[in-house]
Every structure is written in structure tokens, then in C-alpha cells.
Length: 127
Image 1 (cartoon, rainbow, N blue to C red):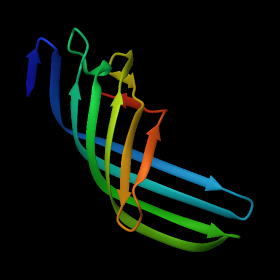
Image 2: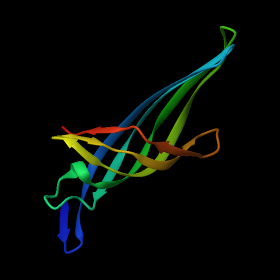
Image 3: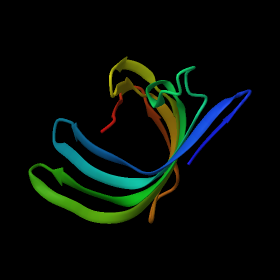
Image 4: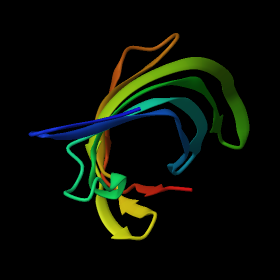
């Protein structure tokens, strides 16, 4: 669905996805997590040609986060949590079908308090 007006246009794309891997290491402890989220994305304020590669976007995502912590080489804890996230960002076109896409948002895992998310290094690929 696409709508054009005097102030710009917006397009709703049914699905988008995010995959994240984080590894942290200290002298005697390490932690790693993997996150897989999917959900709808609303794109608006696209360029004059209507290209999505330079749009502002708003995403609502849901999925899972799984992680583990090790202390002195011994597994201390491991769990999987249901996760929801909302984010807003701006894409900057790098080439055809590729954009730099920094965003900010809020993420909430089932057993934890909400977290502020700043994603300064992100790339959107369109296919």
C-alpha cells in the first residue's frame, strides 16, 4: 500500500527482520547473546523519487533472545527470553538496494527491565 501527498509519502512493508550477536569478555568472565526479531516496518519521508533507501522508518519487532554467561570457563547461566522492540531510524542511501540505517529504540525481554537501544552501525539491504 502506498500513499502520496503534498508533504511526502509513506509505504507499509509487511515484514522486516533483525539478527544481532553480542560477545563480551573480561579477564575471567564472558557472555554472549543472539537475538532474532521480525515485524512490520512503516517507511515515510522518502526521497523525491519515492526511494525507500533514504526513508525514515518505524519498526515494531518481536522474537527471541538467547544468551549465556561463563565464569572461569564454567557455564554460569543460559536462558532464552521472548523479546519485543520498537525503533525509529533514518536510512542514508549507500548504493542501489543498500543503505546505512542508524536507529534508536526500546527493547524488552520477558524477565528484564526495558533497555534503551542505540544502533549506530547498521546496514539495510533490500531484495
